Length: 309
View (cartoon, rainbow, N blue to C red):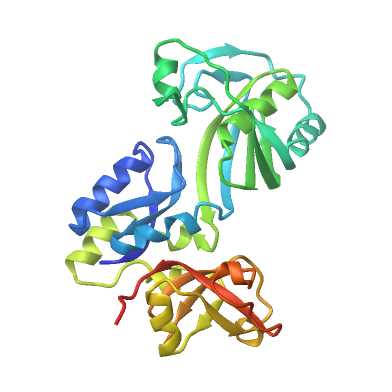
């Protein structure tokens, strides 16, 4: 089984828990995921089974979309509803325009300091382990991009919102930072990841549904080729497939790529089976021989899924 599964993660399970359950359900040991979800969060978790685990690197940079709720006036040590309350404040003086201004301040490219209660590591030790010991260490800020942060409703002290953001964004930290900006504190009361790239929660599968589908011998998930629909596709000849199978680069006509942009392409002979994922490279003698003709582009295989003949 070499598939990409879009799992609707339930509340209370870690992403690692979901991977362990998929192993048991499918009977396949090689399982991984892209884009960790906190135990309190629900929604889309992209899971890779079998050879599909070799594709995980191409999914981590996909934009994530969330629906959530910020609770104003209460801070917790985890920045979400799972943590111990650290402070409370009166929010009766906080106005809708102030909330809108605070949310707007976090749109675009900004820096974020990761929370102490996180899986990031310091000298090999997860930060959440240090936090349990009562230790607080300095964390370097990271660049993140929030392309959309939209308020859906305000029913004090709760603010419903939608967010689209880059990889590595801690939504609970955004909630806490909004509360700090407003001067009343806040935490993340609810979070649902509604989409990862083209994969939407409405099309996700629960763990129970996965087990039932496999028990009934039904097809589940996406093929490796179909799951990479966010990449431009290139059909290759058998001769080109042979070259790719041994790690060789190929030169293709620009018209075969169309107007698509991006670094990576998916390669197939028939439009259903994935031969390889390739990267566009500068065609030069240093990249696999003589430079390509001006009307061609060189594709270097990054992940190959066919055996040499």
